[in-house]
Length: 577
Image 1 (cartoon, rainbow, N blue to C red):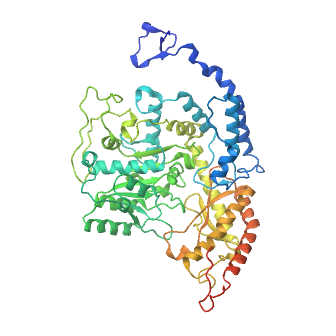
Image 2 (tube, one colour; image 1 turned 180 degrees about the horizontal axis):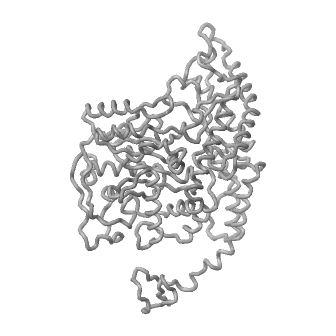
Image 3 (tube, rainbow, N blue to C red; image 1 turned 180 degrees about the vertical axis):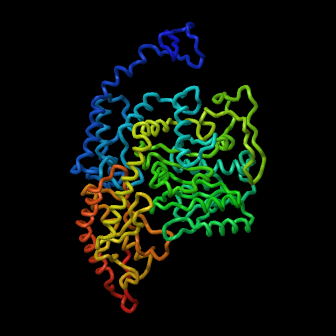
């Protein structure tokens, strides 16, 4: 087999004539491995199927999802007739499977997809995924991903600057999602504040971390993963707007200290998952400074408001955070997944996560390893002379890393900061427009503020402004059963409007004991592509199916409360929905 050396700077220079560094030298594969050049055209049918799929989303009459929506997984298995054959089926089999996948998947490009904290991607997003698949490299060390490593560092630094993190070592790294960002931030906090835990484990420390009652569940899950236990994640009460109450946080910190526990970390939220609330970061930061706690802001959802001058005030105080999570794949339309963990000083990431792996990391081959201080309960000094880290896996919990940062970089290049700002502002206007429609409509009850703090609009369907079973209801008096009965209205309408081209989600009230019995409400998530016509259509769809749902449930409830034989004298029978 003939292997030819070619200079990566100038492919015309071959073999020993190359004068560049050995790092720019790679091997040309044998000719027969260039099968990709001849194989790609064979996938034209697959590409045409994808184009038809994208175009279909422009037609409001096209189903948001196939008629088998709601099927059990076992039923879908039979429908798909999946198989992994002994002998390959080639292009024919590939296209057949692709068509099935597209047919039985939710079309997130559809205007009616208002269900989750993400939606369709965009043209630069699709292009970036194609490029990453073609490069098929790993962004763990600079040696194999030079351009992508530089792009990630640059993009992370620009993102950090949007939040006011402007120090010389400020920046960010891409991670696998918001939950991964939050988990990584806890590891970094613990290993920096209590460096001995990196080698000795949690030991006798009774660590406590804090998050709001509306904070993401990944904080509690991280506490389990890191050996702290879910009981180490303390929930901080929220106000009526869904924001963490700083005075309650301080009370809990003092309680932890009085019990000889070790509080070390606070998770504040920029855009909670249900109401879209933003915690008061300035006040929380003051408490963290007072008690020497690591302040992390989970901006997975609302962090993208940093691109908007109109909305950026909601992030006031974020520049005081030690770390910030942001998911461009949510609000910015970047393909899933694309997430960043940002910091005022990336040296803290390195100190917390670096480990010797001589087979992979060669930066310190001729240098002494970076020492880990054995301080306890404080931010120890960082080495001001430490070199910039370009082997990015050394800053994370991962080894293998996909270059997800390229997806944001290309989209940001395409739209520009101003373009993203316009998209976010338009989406906020659309959310406020829907909230106003709901607020003014006699058959709806608005749960969200108006204007909404983020892009979720939460509401109930209630004819004449009343729930199916209001508070003090004589038919269903138990609050838990009242919640189940009221939730049926929301749940059944949610399923009914899918056939009309809309997918929305629902959520239960939390943090407000008085509202528990009101049951689950609609949570409609506006995205940067959502139009006013779309939200008007959503309201009409609920208007059309709502009366029938309520009538059916009232009839069902009336028959259920009739006294059964042998039950006379024991009061009304509560309808258990």
